Amino acid sequence: MGIRLRKLIGTVVMLAFIIFYALFAMAIAEGRITQAPKLLQTVAYIVLGLIWIVPLMPLVRWMAKPDKS
Image (cartoon, rainbow, N blue to C red; front, side, top):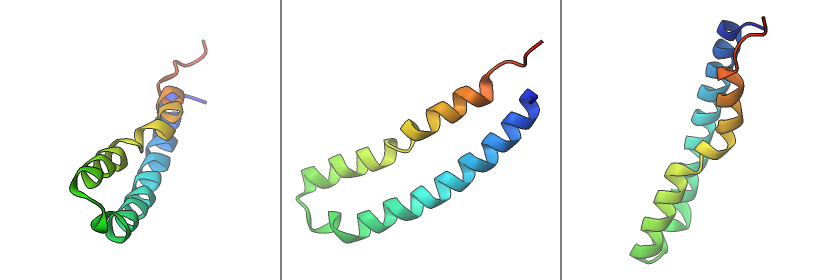
């Protein structure tokens, strides 16, 4: 599989994941986090804002893998 096709597939998967993750994070933020103390809210928003990177790192590595010669 060529790098252009991997990047296309990876981009579509990444966009779909981010859309679903954003909906999930908003649902969590709307629910329980609003009643938590301010410090816990801050930590939760930071974690929710950064945790989406972890499952996408293997996808990014796969997309950037060079073509086989």
